Image (tube, rainbow over all chains, first blue to last red; front, side, top):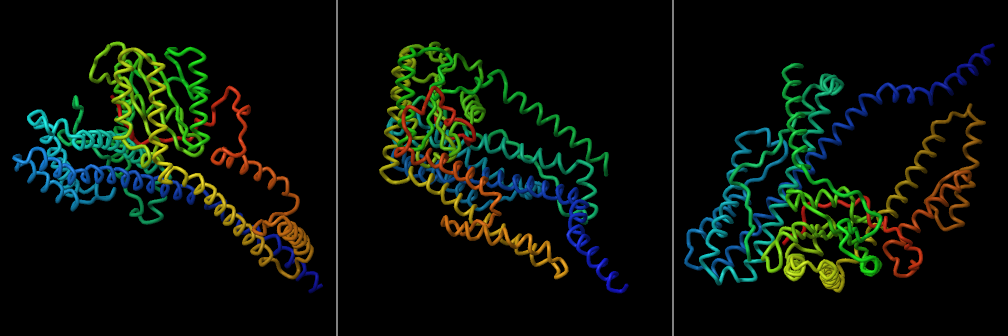
Length: 209
Length: 298
């Protein structure tokens, strides 16, 4: 009698042991799936921001080359040279993460430094008609091409970043996202801010050269 | 909390819808073509088209780069950069390896500019993300400075030929430095690593399942053990010890193998692809390609 009982128990266990994780998983799938999706979307936001930051960096990296060209072809334009040097210094200092975009002060410094970079290039383009040597310089023409390509990449990276933010924020607003945040302590996922391109921060190097 | 966050969310969604709506604007990318020469403006003779296709196929055999040339009737007032990247993404130029290049001529804008124009905003190279290092903006710009005058003079067949010449030169240079060839091999390596990890996970799962079994579960234990042994023996016999798949799944392995072989034949196809298999279909040039704004226009 006792033996049959243990046997019954053993066979019950046999069924229950593999079944328990199954039941547990199916119960959690909803929340876990949601959590995973949020993590995935949030990672995408961060990745797209890194892309965008990289493109801004790419633009700033063109500045030393600009200095070289101006020195060679338009050496008397001292204020342009100092402007470029300052822009470069501030652009390499200010780094932002996607989460920092929620911080107005940090965003403002970042924007200011990017505007400075854009204005340096803008002044360089303004003077190019004044110096025929500069205009015909192959290095200057290449620089303008690179600048144009970088501007285009920045525009596209901004769009892609903002789209990633929209997807993530939308998912976060859906009811089960709130439930999840309540369970996990409401601190886990925060909405992200879009990046709005600022007037004066873009360059249009569309020169007839 | 609920209502306060819902309203901005809705507003944001509306804004995104509006912004993306205007961004896609008047210009709609032509439907994805089935040939690498997408002459939607119909400015080429069938012979010219065939000759260009031959060159583009050969370029792909040699470098693994999917270069698509397109003629489009008009930009419809859309920015050329916008139209070009939208088309590139809609077509997924670059195929599985994501090494795509798109050259587009907008015919109405070219005719409008007329012979002798200094720029027309009617031709553009769009460079896929994985080619930006090999095909730089300045390199494409130099090609365009030669091609542009021909385009505004209205000689589109010659312009397209020159564009292919230019890219051949650029890629030839890059290949000589050994940069173009590396990524197909990286892809094969990635597949190998993925298979290895997949195999390890499978082994892990089998071991875990066996470990969970209690002595009372003898029939199950036996049932699951035997196929595992057989699979191991079969695996080492064919030199693939990292597979631990029950023998019943052998057919799956075969399928997988076939897939691997065909995907490898893209990249190293100079050895084993015969020209007759091209058919009339260049669909391997499309799908999966992405661009981030690299390239230039004139």
